[in-house]
Image 1 (cartoon, rainbow, N blue to C red):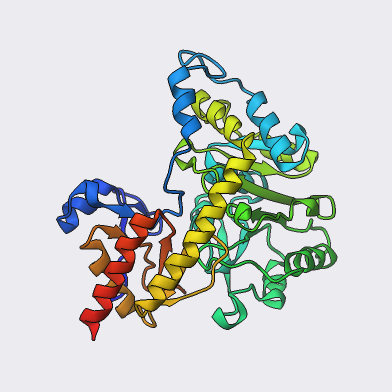
Image 2 (image 1 turned 30 degrees about the vertical axis):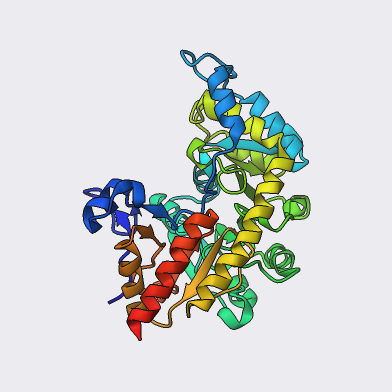
Length: 379
């Protein structure tokens, strides 16, 4: 039995366009109480920062709730510019990183065009590409022994006549970073090997987990002007429910994205709270440090239970069960206990893996105990 993704597909949706099942659906499907469900599949921080409640209680938002948010999101963009060390003209905000990714596809990927991705990587790259509609060419990554790094020669060959290249660093779902200098070398190769009459492909570098490694490749935008770096408030800042992300690049590149941005897709509540969060970088770093410490404890506990945990620099772990069948059995056993893993369907490069978010010590203790029980039952 291969892992069955915990997803919901609406009528008429392609099978690949499937979203995470809700707590209510999981409770009904597995006969567990909704309040007992713990989401280990979403890669979000487990606690909402205290200042969010303070801002909501005060009710002082950038505009009254009866009015639309400002079209330029000036205060939000100013806070992001300070946090990321760029000018406001080098930022376009969006309703989560996913909307920013969609803006990139609209700007750079024509219908019938071609995009390239090193697989496995974030599933939305395929969804967004197909919605253009365009073709997605997947280039297999090098495997766990080489840190799941992308295959540079193969990626360069595939991207030679592509319109857009999707990159994720640190990568989801592998949890690892590309080797030092690999992305710079890729960009240099793309710029040097341009067929006559074409521009080099746009490169979208998704840095959703950059805060967990404390570094960014945003500085490469001047050397490769068709680079868009994507950042988000959903991960390290613990504000996933507010849906705010950013596209960063040169002034010219950002201007090309901005023409596709809806004028009010970010709520005034989201804009106000995220702007405040971006100004509290020290709190974010404290939370990240706590997650990194807990990540080590969780990994050690799962390994002691007999699971094979891969290295990670993010807020999640990838566990290799050796086969899709075993991964599927373990996933069902976890779901029956109200613990929701991220699964991968048949044929996916990670079909024999489960991805598990690092959560609170109490949540993670439930997962470790479940892993110990499940391993004992397998013997």
